[in-house]
Length: 196
Length: 171
Image (cartoon, rainbow over the protein chains, first blue to last red):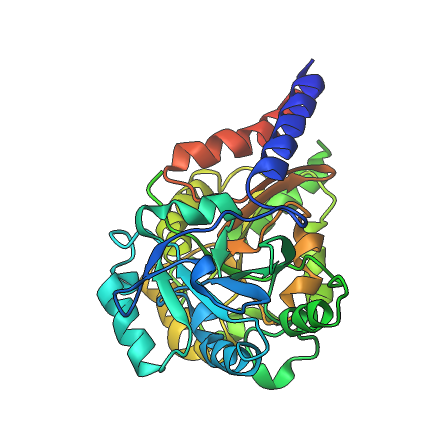
């Protein structure tokens, strides 16, 4: 009986986790969120985009910070090829004052982010994606179909030790009209902070 | 339970907490690769292990440590062992991790995993793990539970651990 009960719980748990958020092949809903420059940004406002590099990131998480320079490079290289980085900050800013809109503005200025850095106000967007941590990447194609989910590369701690550029390889694959492989990877990150 | 084994275990448990002893870098096992660390997830004996992946830079991790420590103290006479796996970075071990352990008077065993290629080992810890910390694994032999969550009370943890410890006394 006990085992059966645990089995049922596992099954329900598995179903829930499989259903929460986008999987490869799902179409992401567009959103309209406030950028650090005060303007509202949605994916449809990117003219000529061939896709979107959605990155859930934030100010406070060391793993997110370690990727800032690499995201800047990635955007500078691929925005002109049709794949802009769109950074979303998903944390509850009351729980993490470091991630407040004002602090996002400061960080964007300090690091001269060439990409949009959007506040997921009310934390409505990250659950749709199923993002669980920062940084967490979703690469969408032109039709907002999810083509890659996961890590930026294989070495968060040391840019010099990167051997596999998962995200860049995935963008290259889409540019070549192919499907990214791997389409899903995992990395260590900071859990997204929410009160519920 | 085998009586001799139990006596040995009690001796080990009384010797191991090193209570009051200062934390130094030498007291902390450092694992360069996940391969070297993996054995701590696979001990096959009558002890219940609680393995927690955390880091000093992780807010929710630091917040739940007192509950893990409290249970560790409460169950010090049980066949129960806590291992805290720190994901702190190499250059933070001396200037952040060690001072933190002393300040918080941590008594659990602490090890450090320095393997930065996390995509290779996240699924080996548990396939359902998203990669966010903290996580807690409780296991005894082949029985195992994985929790990707932050604990807010000692009782929450105790309820989980009791599912393992109670079983050994029933058998």
